[in-house]
Length: 105
Image 1 (cartoon, rainbow, N blue to C red):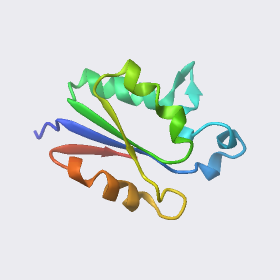
Image 2 (cartoon, rainbow, N blue to C red; image 1 turned 90 degrees about the vertical axis):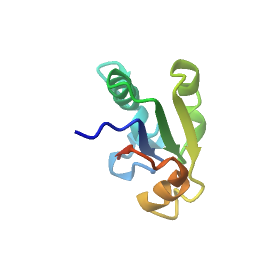
Image 3 (cartoon, rainbow, N blue to C red; image 1 turned 135 degrees about the vertical axis):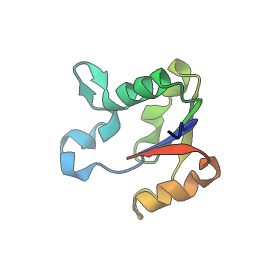
């Protein structure tokens, strides 16, 4: 079994299929049972002893800043093309972290 040491979570998109909810908050930060979806994913990755978690942000990126205070192994990666390109652009901006890595959409 291959054990990844890193994870890239793609969170840069506009979340248009969940409008009007995502007009106010990015889809990964929507709460399910009181906790943002993204935090649930991060906590599960931490349980698996993932060393670094790279969260690719774009849309409302400032709303993700708090994560680096709560989770010391989380690094935010900016995708400035989030509104023009698809998920491939998020992988492009996180490409230097692609080494033994889980990729999560």
